[in-house]
Image 1 (cartoon, helix red, strand yellow):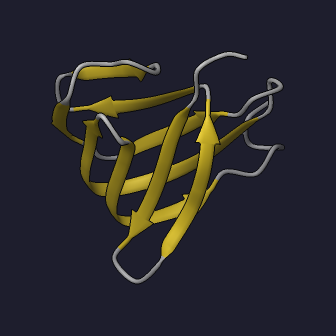
Image 2 (cartoon, rainbow, N blue to C red):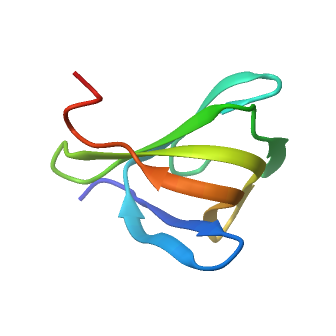
Length: 94
């Protein structure tokens, strides 16, 4: 079984998404960043406007438009702390 990441996407008022994922892709002020299981710990500032893409086991992907905040990678997984996070509909992704 492939390794997975535990991912938490949290906006100011609520937990937006939580679960297991194969990869997280986010745009930080340093550039686009892809996080796989075993990634070195880091803290990055999210670029504005930005998008966080969470690749789920089985190939599905969920995407959120995010404003402000940080991406934290630790041994426990990935946490995205955003000022706001809005789901991107499948139609917008085409």
